[in-house]
Image (cartoon, rainbow, N blue to C red; front, side, top):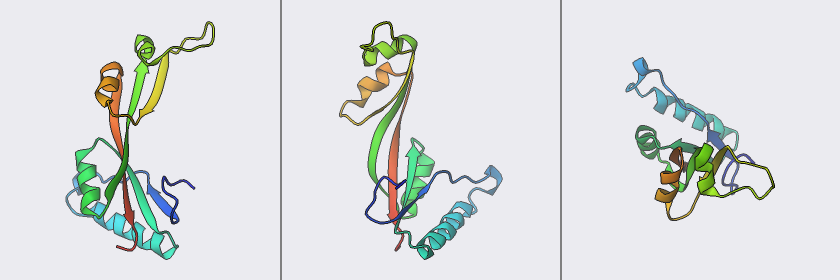
Length: 129
C-alpha cells in the first residue's frame, strides 16, 4: 500500500496547486471534491495529504474536513554539520550529506544542527464526508 494508514483502501494527494490568477475562486475546493467523488466511486475509503510547513495548505485541508494524525521533522545536513548527527563506523567513510526524519521530543536540537529542517504533517480524511 502507498498510504501511511492501511485500515481501508486509500488515496494520496501528492500535489494540489492552483495558478495565482485563479486562487480565491474555490478551484482547489472543486478539484478536491471531484477527486473525492471519483475515489469514493472506486471504493477508496480515505484520503491522505502530506503538508510541509505551509500555513495556507494546512488551513485549506482543515477546512475540507482533514485532520492531522502524524508529523515528523524532515531535515538535511551538509559537510561539517553531518558530524553533529554521528559518525560513520566504517573506516575511511565520511558522510558529506544527509537527510533524516526525526520523531523525538526535542526538534529544536535537530533544527539547530541541520542546514534545513521543516515539519511534515499527515492530514487525513475519510471519504464518507
